[in-house]
Amino acid sequence: MNYLSERINLLAESETLAMTRRSRELRAQGFDVINLSIGEPDFNTPEHVKEAAKDAIDQNYSHYTPVPGYPELRQAIANKLKRDNGLGYTADQIVVSTGAKQSLANAILCLVNVGEEVLIPAPYWVSYKEIIKLAGAKGVFIEGNINTDFKVTPDQIEAAITPETKLFIFSSPCNPSGTVYTFDELKAFAEVFERHPHVFIISDEIYENINFVGKHYSIASFESIYDRVILINGLSKGFAMTGWRLGYMAANKEIAKACDKLQGQITSGACSITQRAALVAMATDPSESDDIKRMVDAFKYRRDLAISMLREIPGVRINVPDGAFYLFPDITAYFGKSFGERVILSGPDLCDYLLDTAFVAIVPGSAFGSPECIRISYATSEDTLREAIRRIGEALAKLK
Image 1 (cartoon, helix red, strand yellow):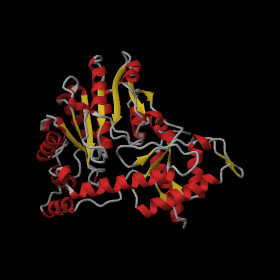
Image 2: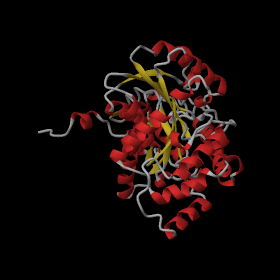
Image 3: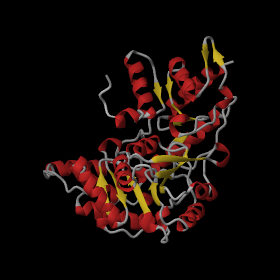
């Protein structure tokens, strides 16, 4: 008898985490598995941030924190948004959460009603669709592809908007494609939303600092839609603080107050020690940080290395992403091919084949709404990346 709720039964497991779990299981069995499935920088948290956490422990920051975050941290985030993005937020427009994923969930659950529509450009981060399911809303997907660097157009967005549309959610730089929208492209999006004042916008900017083309732009920059934008960011990617779990949102005061209310009933405030470390991180100007520059330079080098190697593999189509640390190649040339009794009919088939035969873990593009692709994370060392792509090439060459 199935006694679990319909809500949890409808929810899919994260394919990213599922592939990571499978790779760990194989590694525990003694296999030499290379995991290119997880979105985690392979760098350590900057020393000055770690020192702030140690000081916080010594100063006995061990008590409950305010639900939306320490006031001084919320002000520091507002200062960061002004310094780096030219955005005018006050501390009471900021809510600090246990990771950007919680910030996203808070915003979605506070905004959408059962049956309303949420527009999502594909490819998209895996959890968008599932959180929307939890809210009882309907995901409406706008297709991008490799020929346009996985970008969608203003015309596509406008054509998808209906009276039932409540929300548009996207990321730039994008997980999984690495796509970065330019200022002019975001301006064109904003002009569409100006004509549809019932639509809110969630802008996921967690990869802001991992940008290979210069300045990061936020759609919150456009005054005409500023009050309808919910900006999501955090420390995991830009400061290599995945395990510290700190994200934040910036929005109009009514939405911020609603997210504070929801969070107060679910988790309360984020970790005290993490928040004290975050104070130091938020005070760090990325343009002056050797730690961030070193990390971004390494990712750009690895991107170029991985692309050059993948382009030598017949049938792999790949573009050049401008941010994040993923490649999202089209691998449809291998659909219908086989190795022995094993037939590759889909991206998941191919990813299972590569894990079982080459011991390389990657994620099928179907998890991100693009079944023709696979996602490869290059957040690993150069030697590991070279070996992983060598194995992938050898395994793909066996498919006939």
